[in-house]
Each structure stands twice: as structure tokens, then as C-alpha cells.
Image (cartoon, rainbow, N blue to C red; front, side, top):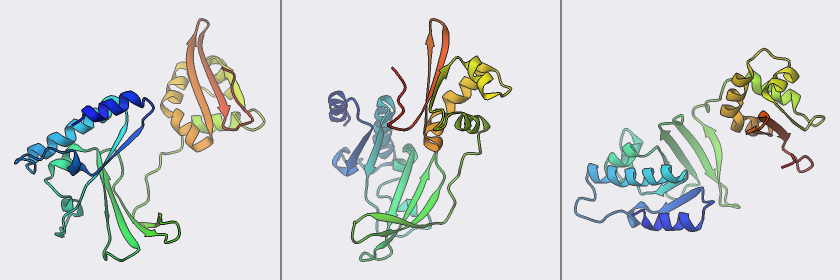
Length: 221
């Protein structure tokens, strides 16, 4: 089942997302295809492939018509499908002709969500109308706030050792602790403040670099 996917990855090394529409087209059509064990094994194989290649694998699957107290029980097949997957998105409409739908989200590493969406008839895109629960947000990280004050339009790029960075920020923290926090939160630093971060070891020791996201400011290679 994963041979064709492996071949595609080998030819397209920069692949980050693969969408399979639908799961039924790649699953084994044996007599045991709807057993819990078979369903779990299918998703486990695909998850193992996705993890090994560091990609996101999105499977499109059908739901049953029968209603249930737990809407995720409407996923066609056994609980083995959801049990092996990292998460699931369930999209449904109360009426087939309606432009309104509900998107439910559940998973191991994400907050359960119930989103009410509306289809824009001009763009044919689904737009968020409201969310029944607020999205979880990371608590403020003082280190990132200090970096954002330091790296600005008036000082769009900087590089130096972790010790020099501690001195420049004027904060009390061990240099190695600072770089550890930055390594863990580099994605957040970029997403929330538009600041790129890079850390590498040189013959003179550890070197860290920052530059503000702008076509006018590029750090030298």
C-alpha cells in the first residue's frame, strides 16, 4: 500500500502533504477489510510511513448515515480507524442543500473543536462563522517578548554568541538555557513576531542569528 507513496516521495523530496481521496481506493478489499484489527493496521501503516518521512498524510473517508451520540462514531468502518490516527476532522451538514456545516476536530495533540462554517457561494470556499470553544493559546513567553523588542525595524538583524545575546538583552539567564528556549520556540518566534532564528556551532563556539521577516532585510549566508 505504501510502495507508490514511497516512490512519489523519492521523486519529490520537498513533499510536505499527501492527500488520499479516498481511503477506500488504497485499502485492502479482503473479506476482513471491515474488522477492527484490519482498520487499525491500515492506519498504523500509513501513520508509520508519514512519521518516517516527516509529512502530513490526510485521508478522505466517508461517514455512515446512521446518527450517533458521538458524531465520530459515524465514520464508516470500525473504531480502529480513529484509534490509530493522530486525529480526525468530521464535516457534516444538517441538510444536503444547506450552505452551513459543522466541522468537528478531535485528536491526540490538538484541542477538541466544534466549528460552524458557511460556504461562500462566490468563492466556493468555507468560511468560519463561529467556534463553540476558544482555541488554546500558548501562555506569554518573556524571552520571546524580549527578542521582539530587541529585533525591530530599527535593528532588523543581529548575530553573536549566546553570552553576547544575554548581555544585549540585559536579562538574567544562563546562555545555554537561553539557546535551549529559543530552539524550542523558534517556530513561535517566527509565527508571532516574524523573526527568523538560527543557531549553529562554529570553530569559535555557538553562533546565534536573528533577522526580521522583510524582503529588505536578509541575513548574509
